[in-house]
Length: 318
Image (tube, rainbow, N blue to C red; front, side, top):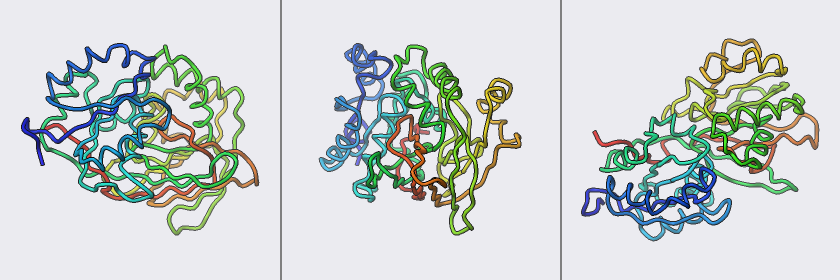
């Protein structure tokens, strides 16, 4: 049901630490810009890592019809997870909106959201939406036990988790693309290829030596890397892109290909499609870290399951 201004009843969930704290410092100005182009809305600030999911669940329980994630890819990922509780949708008709503002802008690129805040706010008006797929990830927590989260963009394992650790402990002053590129270079100096066992749907399991494996619903990760150029948010399948062992020389000579999406032609790259991906270390006890929207929730063993048309995404009115 649309409100008096023709919009869903809306809550903006904003990370004040996005863009090195710029969102929090500039909030009065940003709030005026959003209101001038969108109309009436409420907002909540996250206070700590992992906060957004709980805010979203409470908001949906309280009758909000659209929740807008304002921040980087980590904030968007947490907000997406908040649309689900114990593996089920809190409100299947609730709508996700996105206002990118932060270091990571990979999901924004996949959905084509405007970078400009005023244009982004205007694109949230009206009732046009698209049903998109969502990934459900069951994973192993550090120290044991099972974790559960949901993602709309990309989850991966291998060097990506180490890159996240470097990015999240830096100032991010270089911006998204350079921060991830520098972290990738640092990680390459210490990362050793890992061995994992994969099963895609009901096909036979296989072992591989990996640099990274991306289980992709969206197309971009790692600060603009077009890792899954053929992925679509509403096609009912993951694009599973495996990068085999890469040397520092490979990174320097061919690393640019992953930004343009032409890396699929390389011999150490494999692309497949599946609805369910199960992965575990070949060597018992080996730590193969997960990367989910720029965060490291845990490690393998893990199960990735695609939920078709599980979330309504706000699209610009036509």
